[in-house]
Image 1 (tube, rainbow, N blue to C red):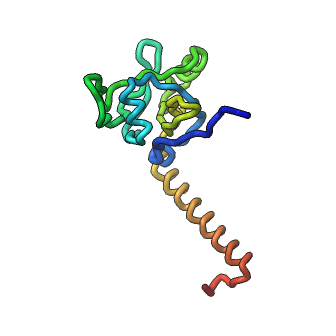
Image 2: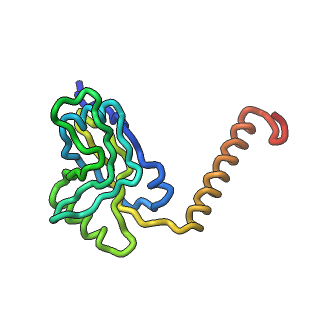
Image 3: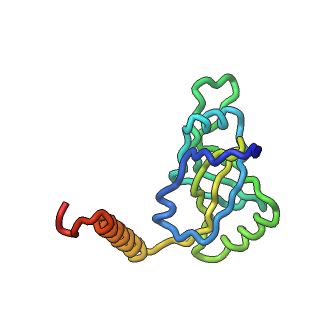
Length: 162
């Protein structure tokens, strides 16, 4: 019997998928303190405004907000402190080569637990222009209308009646 458990999503960055075109995704571990893990298990985190950058040849996550744990003792953490990302050296080098290109950035997409470990999904992304966003919204609306029409057709209803 497998001991693997499915992902338990803590938070996701929906705005990143709207603002950026995601080229490739990576999974990274996080260096956390005990109270941070407990706060994450309660779902008290936000990826709004978070980003990843290089610092001394390593990747760090900036702007991730993990709320303070209410039952903390003398040890505590800063809610928006910089957190080191855990990746293999080859992956770090690949990511750094990509993000040094102009217009490419590294954004966190989701924060979750997998097999008891806190993980963050990172995306190598290129910013979308305003007309690209409008095109994506129009395409999504058209697909939604097509799905509605297909549903009505399969139920035997005509397009004009409800």
